[in-house]
Length: 176
Image (cartoon, rainbow, N blue to C red; front, side, top):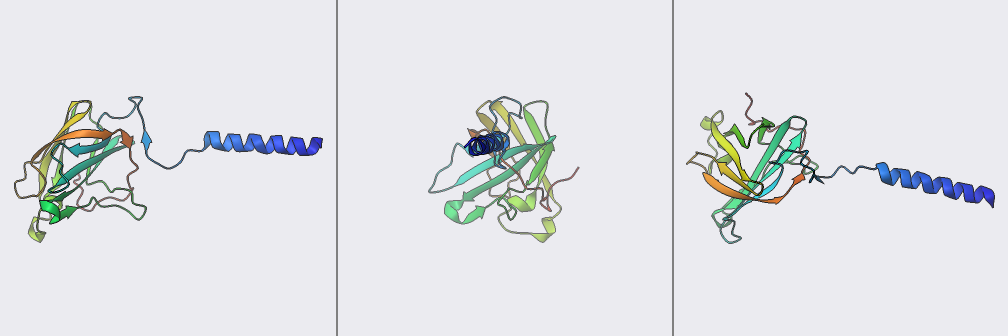
């Protein structure tokens, strides 16, 4: 009886230890301000199920912010899904060092936002910026009048989840 009780107690402690130290490989919602204030999912204030939706997901890994952008435009005539790997983790289309202020400036491949694929424009990169207006509002600016994404969009925070991004890199990712 004593041996069975000790075995049960030992197994109980092992199970409790496993549960306590188990860290699932899932996105985390870090409310402790340890992560960049950009991290999370952002939705365009003009999203409309009938005409268009536009959203940005931002994750933080090591010393970088990773951005994925997706949307449905023109009533479904143009769908832009952010690239993903085999595990459905987003592949970043913008990657920048974590900024010290509330503005991120980078470049984005024009091919990613062009309505029609133009091989002659493969190496063309346009400026893109993301500016935090406050804790729940971000301004997206892409001065590319050829694309289907809005050139300026006010984005509202949907969550603060630090999504897991793929280790793969988009071949069109801008590299300084």
